[in-house]
Image: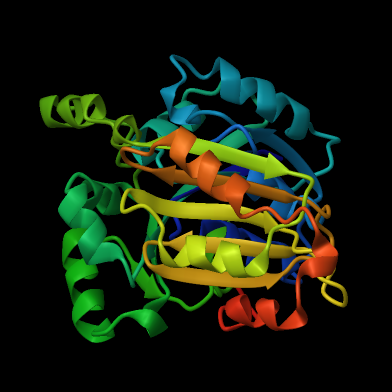
Length: 331
């Protein structure tokens, strides 16, 4: 039986990894294989899902959609898609700066005889969509290439009904489903796609122009890692005074405060900050920052200044400076 390959795409911070984790936790009876493509040398998304997935391949430090042919993807599929292999379905989580049409064409061009295209799911951040499309109007076209659009974080949109109507109009007939925390019935995603694939056609001139204006050409990533714990007060100051170009930050934090040694996961999208408990993460700080016009030296210097060399000097009240961001679930 052919193994369906589902592509999950969406701009930075839209909730792709949250959706994937929801699918992995759901009791579908399916064995799920995952290919994670993160934009940065430290593949935080792969670390986030690794403990739950049946079989996984990760690709960091670049967009898979920039591959000149399907060979890179085929090499990964070869490790997952075997007749007697460990998975029933494969999910490709694209980088937040990937071009969905290019990702789908890679799957369609695969020479692996054991896979078939399983559809494209475009995840949209309802809280940030209108601001994001002002910066990147080409993202409107991504909605029309999708087989299904998930309007995620609908509970955080100031005018959800109006936004839902707008996205449905832009999607041009593609089904749009509002979601919170990426929660959706897995059967909706893993059923065979029963519609003509829109990207099997020849690329038009407009498509080629759009491809030349690849979104991630405007972005860069900066990685920061350190074994020393963070000072919670100084890190909170960093969060409150982030550079304007820093759109997305994700990773793990370690404060090392007595009684609070458990690592934490941090996610920022625009002005939004979410910090959650991450008991399975290593006790070190590991961050990936993505944005436009980032000054890597300045970011590194500011985070280095936030390190704590004397944990004993950190009072427990300092931790209150970040606990206001703590929530039970990440989006």
